[in-house]
Image 1 (tube, rainbow, N blue to C red):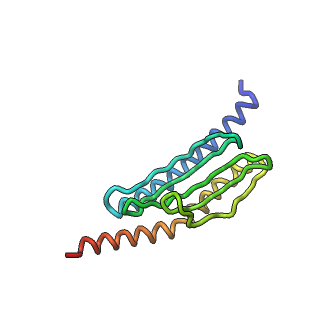
Image 2 (cartoon, rainbow, N blue to C red):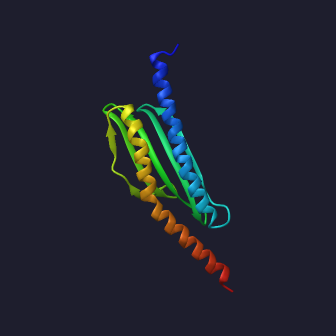
Image 3 (spheres, rainbow, N blue to C red):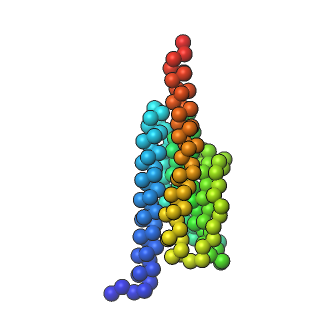
Length: 150
């Protein structure tokens, strides 16, 4: 017999799994593009949950290698706060230097999080792709110039 708590847990776990699948699909695209640069590229992704004194945080990220050991990272944090859930999304260079930061959003409850996050991830991936694709093209061009030099 399912208890109400089971329904809540199942809903949260399904959200986590769907978020993981969405990030994994995007990462596969990044990995494919990174492999076109040649050599071993940094590519990774994860969807993880941690908890500290401020409450639970779900982090979703994907990293695409752009050559020379550098990468572009797409990052989404979902943090519980007393007034709701804070959604923070950004694209960064080598996981540190922010290139693009979407406006933070606070949503009232976890059901709203489940509706907003897939769209927010889609937007995040979309706004960061031109930077990634440009960096990949530059890396390819630099590689060809090095190979062609005497």
